[in-house]
Length: 308
Image 1 (spheres, one colour):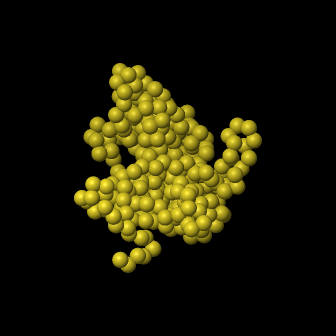
Image 2 (image 1 turned 90 degrees about the vertical axis):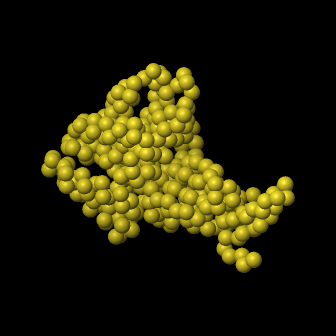
Image 3 (image 1 turned 120 degrees about the vertical axis):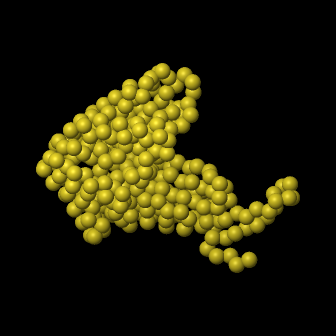
């Protein structure tokens, strides 16, 4: 067999009946991919986000707000052309990894115990160093708060999925907007209107501190931690992609309408555009629970992905 950079190993399962193929992806290839994603995320605003801001600028009825939106478009253009960060806060690296069941990580010869997590963190450290991106991670959250100097460890969420591919999604999450995110455990009898009202209030309370216009991720269901995870994962969807469930897509529309009716506007200075999109992800939950989480994202919504 011709073995390229990604090796293919064949073997037999224990029952001796079905042959299987394992695809090996080198540690270095994963680190290189994450490095590139970190730099690209901080330099290049995604096309869907840029298009949403441009559309908002054309529709904005408040002249000062329209001017701010046009400045955001200009800022994105300068960052891309001059290869400089979109924002001085280049974020905490949040990485969603989907590893196929037929994928194995091939560690370096001198690091036999290295894992996918190690490869991702190596890529984050290299990306933030080579991209001249601000390193914003402290190793001890309460006592010393000493900077790790590498923007690692990243926050990594690993999911095992069918197939022989590895998907990596990097989100550079700024501190100002993350600080305004909230969680609430509703009574299981809560009505849709109660949840909508609470989410709108979370956004109102976020105010100018979180740099609107926002992208709002909402997680409904699961349990305490899963609802929060869903609210962040929702941010990875294309801004033009509605929830596939008609009920939840309707809630997304209601939320976006009510949030934009707040009049908070770009940078909190008034206007029609407080949010560019609201995206909901849901999961089954316990009969006694109804957890809801809101993850606030600023206008500099930086994320990139690749499939290896």
